[in-house]
Length: 214
Image (cartoon, rainbow, N blue to C red; front, side, top):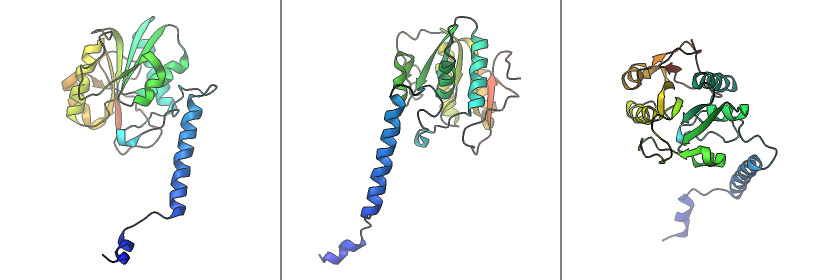
């Protein structure tokens, strides 16, 4: 085989390789800073979006609005579950409220930095939950299924119905209105949730109780 054939194989230049290494190093440094003291680990964006996991964080205003709604809906001493909705959980924890407790069910294990309140969750196995997560033990469940598909919504709905005492706050695409009503009995709200980056799909909130989002 002629050595010239090797020229056809695309190779990264040493300059590109150095730039890549620098990028990954900076990324590691950022992640390291985030877990060090003095950094607010609950601020939105403290863990960056991973688009491969279909992650899109809410805007600060939307996360605050949804967190406040959850606190009111849960009531004094209420328990709030955030299913695939980490930015709402982060905003709840930022409030440092004494009158409610919250936990986060999430596939992304980077959120395990939140300790015992983090519960690994894969919507493909909707009832594969820890034994200490008792049925109907949360005053409200806030959920944002990662994908706009009926299969994802249906499986997430199993988890929601298992966890909630009754109240549900669902955030998903406007195109899912019919399926949301079918699987969870929720209705669309006037409130329009916004994300920190603009999404192509129109997003809406859905509830099954008289909420402050109307």
